Image 1 (cartoon, rainbow, N blue to C red):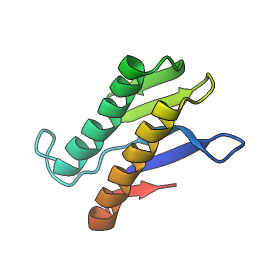
Image 2: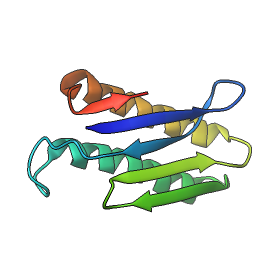
Image 3: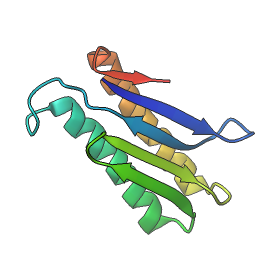
Image 4: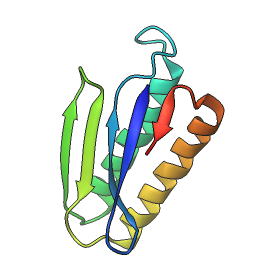
Length: 104
């Protein structure tokens, strides 16, 4: 199961996340749940890096299926939008495949 923890600031705005685990929906390389989550997460991180001036901490461990991302600067409007978009997509996956993904 993929477990996603949300980091929020004192204003309850999303400033990051920790994504851990594998869906185990199918064999490695054929798992559409892992692929969908990975695309959303990696695209969000890349978009924040390329389209904003926000600074962040990023850690990943491919074996554990872990990505830990947190904005450490003031949250820009662009990053706020991108992170909310990420969680909208993840909620859609959870709605249809809730036994493989859990948001905390």
